[in-house]
Image (cartoon, rainbow, N blue to C red):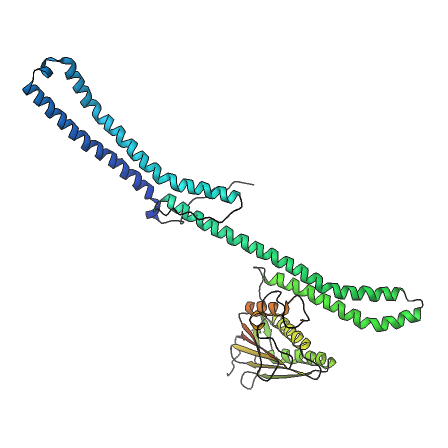
Length: 391
């Protein structure tokens, strides 16, 4: 793999990036200034002392060695002072740099030990301060990424456990019926059992297919590349056809299904919407209502279309939802605490919410005052170009 070289371009502002340059320039000027002032003061003092010594005593005048010694001291004095000033300011720079470097090294050791419970406190307006700030942001991003990965793994484990639990029952039923067919001692008895078992086998295979489709749909919805594909449809016709299917299905369970639709004005203009995804939502909601509505109950779907909005309401006369469960019904894998749900995986309402959000709409669920549950969908739609409607 080819090594990629990166550079800092827009990470920090220009003023902060020049902080260390200003620091070193300041220290350099400080060294020169202090050296000049101290040297000048000592040189002037030395010259005054020599002048006074020459004036009041003859020792300095006649002592060559002393003269050379004093002259050498005056020449070496600036270098000695310069060395002292350099050591002083070097110590100050070391103190300024050592703290962030030590904190960064300690942070690296923490990361190597897979411990992200740390924070770098250094906050100076220079490149090291920028580096420490960026390191803290990197730690936050890494921690968030690890938490997301942990949640994803937890969801995967929960999904596998829930799916295994849900699939065990239909698989056991199918396996038991197949074994019963295999043990039949005559063709006539086998045919009798087969005729009796076929509806059960079909229902359980459909249940397994539905569960697997839910998992595949969620994987697609949580993919960043998932796209909506709107097409031109006649909403009234499509919803009427769907309602006929629902009515037939409900009648099998001795449940009455009714449908009502109010189009835009007196017309039914075509609109652009991804009806396949909307159909999946309605299927989930209808199945959920069907399994929570007892025999001789009712399920009603009503719709209202305006120029740019579609409103759908699905209401049932079932048992409703416990108040403590209402805030959580759209959560992934949520299971009611008050009653056993038909779908142990708890994916139906979750996938419905994801699909409606992908369609840029909203979905709400509540208990109706007269009993049962009511789901309301508000969905933006687009009129077909060239079609003029009256709201």
